Image 1: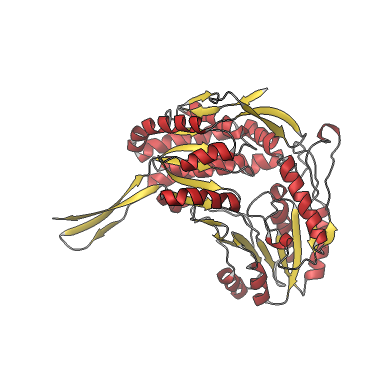
Image 2: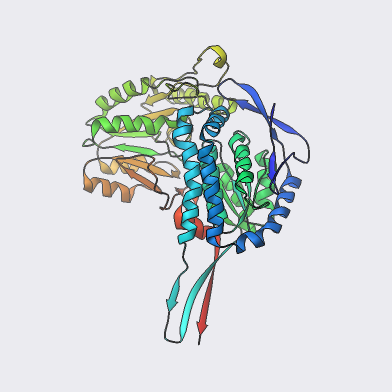
Length: 480
């Protein structure tokens, strides 16, 4: 059986404990690999090798670091089919999605920050003919990166790429639920010639490996994507230690549909936004707010479009909804469907587990599910479900739409569908989210800041924001 080992000091090695965790294939519900169960000693070893690697890596020119990252980006694309199959097997997402989205984006993350560091600049200010000021931006040292299970390699590389580009060494922990592509990425780093110790990947449980990373005194910053409760726990440990923190947390994102929208496009895109990747994307639009003038027709067409989504094996290119990532998460989503009915919701479609039969009969599948008639302040409308469950609500005017959109503790993303320029600007300004799409969803320019408001996170990622986070500014004033 495949053993997923740690990557420390440029080598694939067993954990100190020699213990391994069962890794399940969501599509079949069967164990297909073993994951290294690491602990604080493994993290300590990774920090030691990173400490030794840091001086030479940080002193390399930006271009030399970028050349190495570009090699990694090229090798990701060269191994696209193997990586996509691994991602699908580990996560349950349709393989076509991994090929079109996850793996190409992982390569793009590496190549983008390789390019960005070549262009990264420091500020220079001339106060007078005798006084010059400039800013040095120096790498922090050792970074802790903890990534989630929903877009495994995509978000893993999103975190480590800017940290490496800026000259840091990284101790990374992929989710123990989906570690396979991070393991394959380790092999790619070896093939690309990434210097030993620059990147170390330590597998295991969050309470053991993640906790050790966050608590380690020599790790200067933590970048984390995951649930809000875990983010708060991390902040509680790291903040008193004065570590830099970038926390990209949960979302309960509104989709606002005005009565003057481009109707056919809006219906199709709001269905995609609600159910892409089985709804397991923090940016999914699970609360669909529709102007009362078109609500009934929109509901009819939205449900009709949702019913076209085929749930089934992730290895079938006709499947639009694959398997839920784990049995635990599968049961959590089903419990929220039961809760929605208890809270008075009217089930419009879906609402139950799905059995594809054959070799996939024991996998974890849920039909795309839609409710209406739920009060705004109920748990179904305010808590992150992170699955193929969406709710429909109507509104009378822009002000009510804003109130509904802002009616949760989260503030990650929103999409707005209207042909009215004034309404678009008004909604964009008033909806409390860090990311606003108008007549689009999940369109990403990697140069812009990415992150949420309220309970959806702290800090921003992407472009210069990321490179600034992973460096320490030092102001130098020279008089002559």
